[in-house]
Length: 306
Image 1 (cartoon, rainbow, N blue to C red):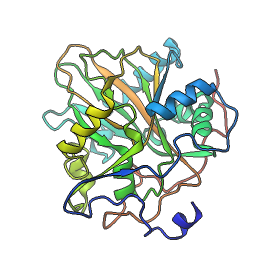
Image 2: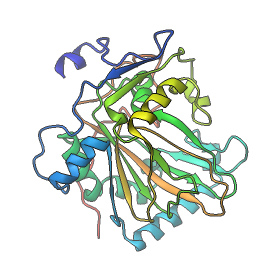
Image 3: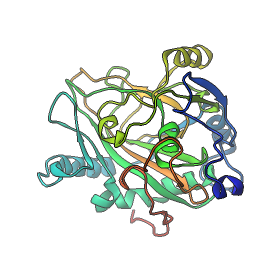
Image 4: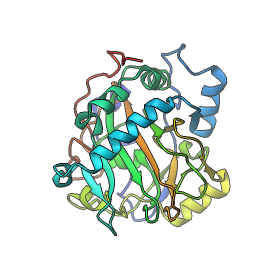
């Protein structure tokens, strides 16, 4: 670990460098040593290690869900935010797709990223204090919410943000019910143990295009077919207030939403304070702060009111 941080050019997960894709074995733990106690029971952590994800039912109360939904509506209707680079609209419409760095824009979501129900679980998985590498709210409105193609978040964070190790975990807080038919998250369980090395050099300012439709850094169909045949695909349905916790290297995506039922969630990436980003491994410059934070101040030092 220390060697990796001191020598960021020593790349255990090369990607966007070779003319052909490849599948590489994971070289990092899934649940890291250092935190023997926490909210997760041993069998829950074992399941997380095997599948790469777990779901915590009804972690957020109905009253809290309503508070977060009201804040989502406020943000989407704020005309000042529309001119902000942190706001991404659907490529085929003017509807808001995502708002990034939402914990710095909104006090409501600042409280959420410091909530011990989330932070203590992230600490337990990563074995250290954690900071927010990225946060956003995702809107997937009915009758046209766009899809997110298959990808590993770590591939992008490693290539473009300089994240050295697979020592980050994502929390997706459902603010609406997730059905099989309204663009629910899909994950290939067990895929987190294989890194897909992608092809294609990273263009300058790639993030501007990739936030709407990513092409560079997405896995090839052969690798996806192999992983799907080996692991299958889980569709993560559930109710508003459920939280999905998944490893940074899970192969995941979601389909479009042509139903009348919206699907919205708050997405928070916690990274270990021992895994701070260095120079990008496969890009000329790091992405902006709102996509890959350089502020590594640990979260969870203050507790939110109940």
